[in-house]
Length: 375
Image 1 (cartoon, one colour):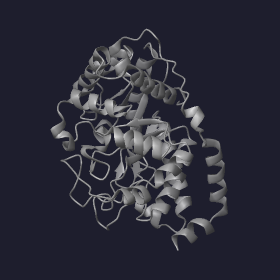
Image 2 (cartoon, one colour; image 1 turned 90 degrees about the horizontal axis):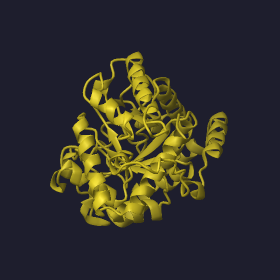
Image 3 (cartoon, helix red, strand yellow; image 1 turned 60 degrees about the vertical axis):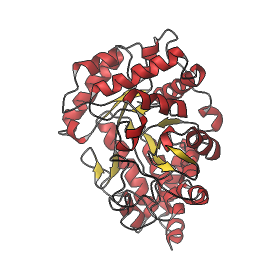
Image 4 (cartoon, rainbow, N blue to C red; image 1 turned 30 degrees about the vertical axis):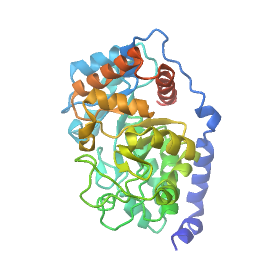
């Protein structure tokens, strides 16, 4: 029935989607050849900063964040509800951050991001109003996904942001479980999630705002109450189910040119019994890049997550994620010191050889290429 809905309704919307998909197709060759246009004389600390997303408390960014941006020591900023009192206010903040970036040695735009999934998970007022689940249950789900992606992109563009940490591609397996209870999953049907996630991505990126597919390889089997933000989560899912259900939406997202993928902080024993996905070279490289063909920018989930309590300090976590192959480190504790600690540790690991220098600069190349294509 759902497949009939997808294939049978709203030719106008299908036509829009086809145009958007055609315009956003990104070849593996183009993704594998980033611009690499960062200045060659960057210090290790500046180079490391190109891999760190900062956050801050309250409505006004601290002077230290502006300083980090002007000095070329930050890749971007993530915004939360506590940073936003209204669209005019946050647009003013974004304009100030962009002005600081214009004075830096890095010529690409900052990555200015938030979580604008729809439904309950929205940092900005307005679109998309429907949750992912409501989109999946609608009479015209593809059309609703196109509308949600378009609305999200236009909303973020209106305040000067250029990255959305959405859509969620998790395929929930039990009604009311962790990802379903907040209506963040499009469906329990992986084919439907693939179709709607790709429609959302294509429509949003047509507005100029980069999309982020998350949380690879999937949180759809996490029971209610198991939240990686709060503590360790182990998902004993078979490798067959991971490949045929949880990961199934990602090749479709890659085909339409999704710019970023966020890694989960859950542990998947069938693939790597010892490390969360975002710290696992096996999951980042073999599963996401090799099996699913993703060549864009990878990003961690929140570095301060409770699921990482056993993995050391902020700096140790940042280095472990980079060693696993994750490009961007998301420091979302609303504390600029967290971003500084992560960047300092990355710089030290680059300098002393703990992190492979070629892999390090390849990550910066991918990030720089992404930034160069954003408003």
